[in-house]
Length: 558
Image (cartoon, rainbow, N blue to C red; front, side):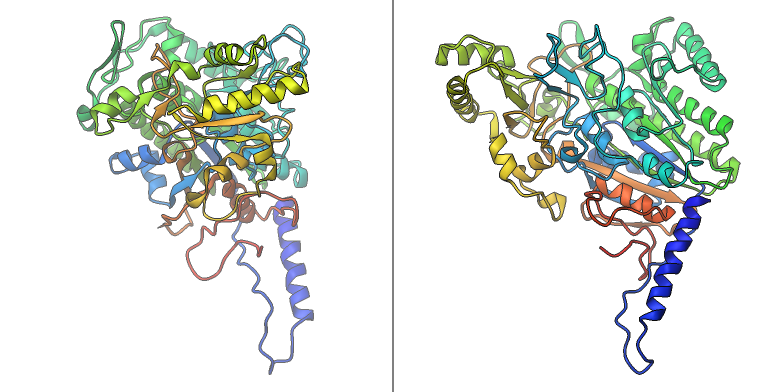
């Protein structure tokens, strides 16, 4: 194994240097101890469960009996943090296997405004090639060119080209951002089956799984069994005459692909594909550390559609636990030495209608006055400048002044916009581009960060807005619930930032560390486990977490 050989060489050099510098026996040695070096695993399995908040993990932890129970009995960091303010899928996934915060990955949001693109639609999607002809932010060609940093797989293949990297996901962004630019296989659900980059021909393993999924969709699905533990939270919440959530069981009519996606079936299919590619590629069997990255989107889609506090989520997590258990059983049968890490790209906030019933009377939805169309109408009236004046992707987050405004108009519109937002009772704070340029890089425990720290971690000078708006806690930034969008995430508050970080390997002694760590710590931790060198300067934002109980650390000195 090239990585193992490189690792051994580095250790030998370190030991040799130490020996040459060793003082006489009578003089106490002050040389730093050489870190204990674990044997690299044959396979790393990196799993991102979209919207699997630390709150969900804590609520359901005692009920897990399958794969999540195994991980909960390993090395557990229950207070992991997606430490930045823009707690969305693209930024969150960009941190997990790069070790960098979104301000450095360049993935500042799911969508942002790029007024330099030539098309009329100035909103760009994090994973699109906006230069491709006849595309927009909803109909695009997938591309990773906006990711500024390498992933674990990219770094691994740079030192060992024979290592293999495979990623599967329920969303393109989940697979692409975990895989990186050098991955061997990258597959995601496209609404009908699993697809990849344009022109990629599906291997037999993917074709077989797609055929099975097509049949499964055609057959329909009876209501899922509701575990007895789900009964207390399976209470209906009526949001409109045609929309009730809380007690659903994912019954699906034959041929309904949309409902297939909004159910535990999507994760089951994604894990089927992961297991199939694991088998056909014979990952971990050829003397090189391989990577299998899996992003499971079902928890996020269920959370958005029904809220994370109801019976639907309880069923979703029970099925996820069972399906992960099946994957780990498959891995056990290979007799591979594998290391699993599981975390999430962000948390999630329950719908305010249920929160108000459950002891949170201040939970509410965002005021329509903060929506982009209404803000523009208000600013046009106050400045007497023809709009639109503000561009953005919602009632909060990065907001941009129209580029064609004159310098004088920009100053006038910015002043009016800041007064509007800062004067609104639902807005916690507003930071300007200049505020964030001047702010230092955040450091220290993520649970102690200020809002400015969090916003700085999401800030890219080229891509971020002219100002960023952060709403107060418990404000759901969806003005009115609709099918598929009753709850969401994206805030700088704990329920959206906190996620579990779980490691498991057969040789690891279990322990739990409740203090806050970051998802950017995952890459340096995995690098230490496989002996992958990281740059001494300009390296990841995260730090290595020592997974081995005892006084000796496997983490390199910082």
